[in-house]
Length: 238
Image (tube, rainbow, N blue to C red; front, side):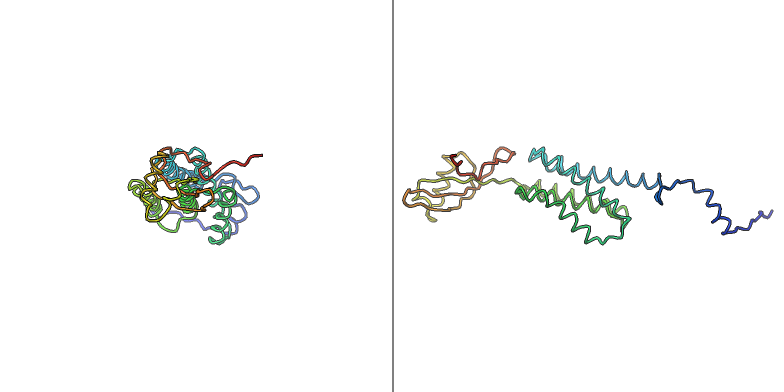
């Protein structure tokens, strides 16, 4: 039995439209696109999950900084959303990366970020850019990229490379101990008097009239919360 074949007239289809296409457009943009919406939600959830794992289990576990927890999660989500929406625009990727770099630095120029916090911020920005941009390879390579970053951070954290250090300015009166040949005695005296795990000391301004010197000591803090007045020597009297 031969199947009945009907001739297809493109002009008629163009006049009456495609019957199978039931999407509604508003100003040239579809009001609802199911497949695209599911793709967006899955990629957004994946990016949020990866950033949450890095922030919660790798960063927050040691630092306990709720302010940076809040910042990292919102930063990663916002950058992903912006870059995902920019996919439809004819914008060079270098311009987009420069735009995000400017956005990331505008607010934080007013506060000096510790190197560990800045590193995590850069990693989360980078992952959000990767996850929010268009896929240029397979989904497997896309997932493996995120997993490799998480594993690398976990490995470096486990080996103790990100152990936090803090600095403190001290006005020191035993000026005879600041000589380079008595550095070990200076360290022992500072550890005994401050109770801090001091690993390095630097000698600054020396006042021979008052027999004092400014010392910058580097130590391993017991408290994960940073001390905001570590580098303050004294308050000005008003």
